[in-house]
Image (tube, rainbow, N blue to C red; front, side, top):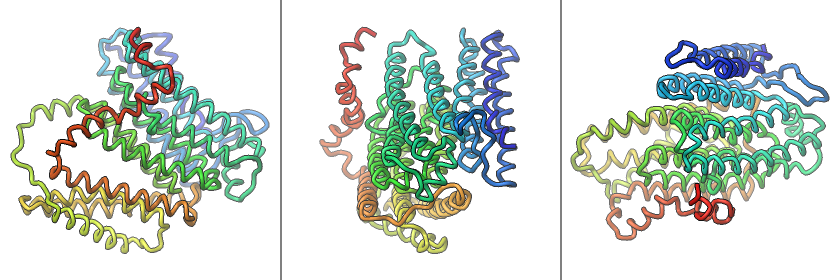
Length: 519
């Protein structure tokens, strides 16, 4: 059964060949072949998932020599990622068949979409470092072809070049990290490396391998300040954006989760990941709220989501990071594919009446109620037995509930709204603890539990709590100070992404306005 996961990209490869060798005419039935490939791959992954449930984690036989080659790792990480990628791939391909109807190069587009999904499957199912690196690089190359589907568009060429540069850094870091791990553990089998790292074995500069893995993840997942290409990829068709934001950009988080045991041995690297991730989450969320274009706002939202996921990895909460990736896959694919309809719906909404604005008293009460809900429901789920990192993460998430509760506690809010927000807040809090327990239980024998926090991790936890609390207060009280003259200037700065991308462009020396003017 394990071999099924290894060959799951094969249906997509066949579909790609058929699209290239026998390009179908407009409206031809054969345009559905990539969709059928998705269903076939989903069936293979489902059978592998059944084998996981019955027999436990395993690695397929190696196709190669001296522990280097191709193999598939069947565990909760690979199964969760592969099932999600195959299912979302089917949705995106179905959407593409209709959305690109009439395009002269629709068959080529469908073929490259299938190729990209196949490469992502090759990556997330990898049981060997060689296969992981091949899938990593191949995914970047296939995506580049999709980004240049309209090669005559200057902005598309600019974004594709920036993506290629970022991908080159990520790929180089991954290859170097892989070489250090193979030399230090004497094998390229990922499961063996993780088991040896958990046992404290291995030699060589493993901290450097962990640092390089972190660099690869940061560049691959477009965390601030490496996010520039992601927020500029707007010229490709919408299905490309959906696949990119829902699948490809999650590869960085997957890499961190896959080598969780190695990263645990480098607490300094985890601290860097937590800091970079938290910074990216706060900046991305703030900037996304000011973007007038839907796709640009969603791109900045992805920066925020990837940052929060990396923050979870930095806190060694790898099961929750995996859950976050899967949820983000579905959410962001739906957000991009439905963005056009959302714009029409918003345009058709009649202007609402006065909005209930919570005062400072309501904000204070909402914080008190949110924390009370968190403590009360948390005690029911055994919060006292959970690691401090998980408790802190829950507190950060509960800050998001504060804004919801504050709307219901506003002085002019109707009583029905108050009860509705309270019920929704209770449901959100209970769902967090239930999903946390479920994810931890499912990954119990695959991913490590967070270690006891040292002084550095405690400092990061406190910094994160204070930062997200300030952000929650600012968001909740925004209507009270929105009219201040300084807010207009702040909004302009946020709309321009705090000019971080412009600074990085200048420092890189390759994307100056003078050079771009000729595009």
